[in-house]
Image 1 (cartoon, helix red, strand yellow):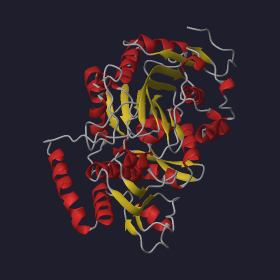
Image 2 (cartoon, one colour):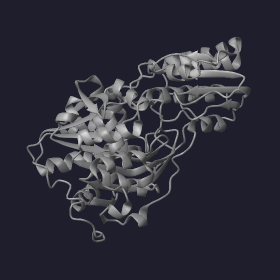
Image 3 (cartoon, helix red, strand yellow):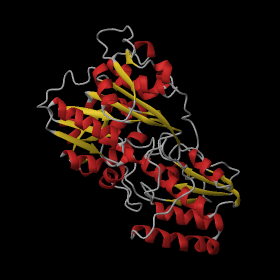
Image 4 (cartoon, helix red, strand yellow):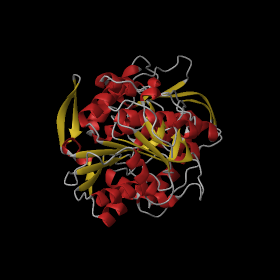
Length: 445
């Protein structure tokens, strides 16, 4: 490994290592970063992984690059134990969707992290369940998990992935999972990037560990494309770690708005020149991954469906509606693959306005309905968030017509019921296929 690059002694370094099976890769990255330098073994430690989806819909949804691997979380827990830490918790607040069966509890199981917690006697905390405390974020009121606010040593463990709304989803963005469900939605309504920065400033993670075994292009969901990266980046400084993570994805950190906003709040710079790197040099392992893509329309194209446009919702569409729309389109793409439609437009989020030329307009959620209130011929699927079942029904009926729509929905309803009863687990071709040994399911077991 290389010696540290010259930098101000006031800036904590980023330790970067190539991942190899065993704990030595993470151990080396933590040592390069002096990661446990300020960790009193008697302090309460809270690990915050990134489990964006709670395992609902299908267990066959690929996890690579979308959620933190159980492998990195387990290695971190063991190293903390070696350091003498006894009070360790793992907390997350995943996207909660009752209709699809997505919950934090199921997410812990689906990710393999529940097994880690049981084996190593670590507590699991569901941030969605509360309690939460009110916090002022630059004039915007938010509610943040009490567990996260009161943790003695908060460790953010994100995945190395891109994000269609924020370019990257790394350590700072990962902390959005500490919010109440209502506050998560409010972030999208009142300035996502600025509020991500202010939330991180309040929580002040003591360590960031970027899980780069896999990286995700066109994220943040499994509709993106995963790649095997085999990298780990660690730092006591959240800004420098995220700047390095952005560079690993081939994205200039000065172009990432929430990193710039955080840097302004702390009087720092997100420039790579300000990032002291120890271990593997960034230019040896960085790869350029695409972040800006309309994965919704990509799902339809891959299913050879034409005549339907789905404008990208933008930042003022919360994760709940964005995820619900994705789930509905994935099912529709399987059920009506190869169909040609005439001028159908599906709009979600507060920023999207339906095109005048569209012949059939479907508005997804309350925000899209308000923004397109003048479009009186549109069909609005109300909700905050929108319900996936109702959305799928509306999409099928108003694109195919009543009789054909019902013929499509009947077997879909049976499949959904069979899935909920545990009688089947459907494979949706909208998701990419990943094969071992490059993509190892044992990383999530």
